[in-house]
Image: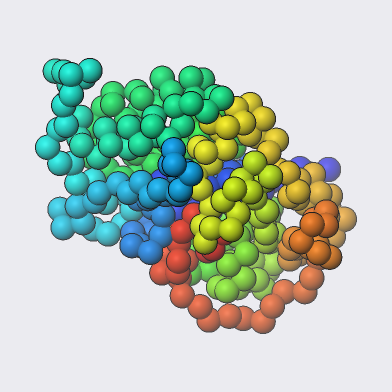
Length: 306
């Protein structure tokens, strides 16, 4: 029996939310979409943490779009202001925004149960070098967070795949080039994915509908969830299991796919918000006309488009 290969695609975002990493738990491969354009409406250069006073706080990486070769994410440059020096780091040269983000994390989470476990690697990332490209920063953070969460997923850059097309065709081409049996999409993929074309190409689709774990209930009423780093500092090794609390496991998706016997469209189903999620198989929708993924709200929270 051939083991299905599950692939998901996403723009590289800054300090992603828990739902992003649940998709990685489901997938074998993440295609990092570094060839799409930067979107000011998204979370490609910003995300939120919980400040020490119990309020959400935006951390934003300053960009220099005017000096970037293009608006493609692989070309977007960071605006590095004059270095900020202090007595503790005298003789070092670190951009002010990097020191500011490190200090925000330290002040917000320095007293959480698992701060000491992750602080050294995080300090090295923020204070140990100067970042000039947004894509390099986001991928470095992504690899670090994947390692902390012990997620076994292969990271592939879309630019390395040589993907072509736009909108749904771009995602489908990335799936083909990464030998996908099934594409794991966010719920807003329903707005633009040409489902019949995926099935004709032998690629199934699963739409993930993510529930925040109980550890994140303090931010569940916010319009956008906090970064997964909040969960890590509060739960440590238990953060990985917390990501899946109340959500579909990979085994259920694979079982439903094998039972279907061929390419199919599946989605998350629950009879009520608190009920256990299950996999529902349905017929593909008719052809859609919708904006390209990079033109939609490409944020990293519950409204993520991919």
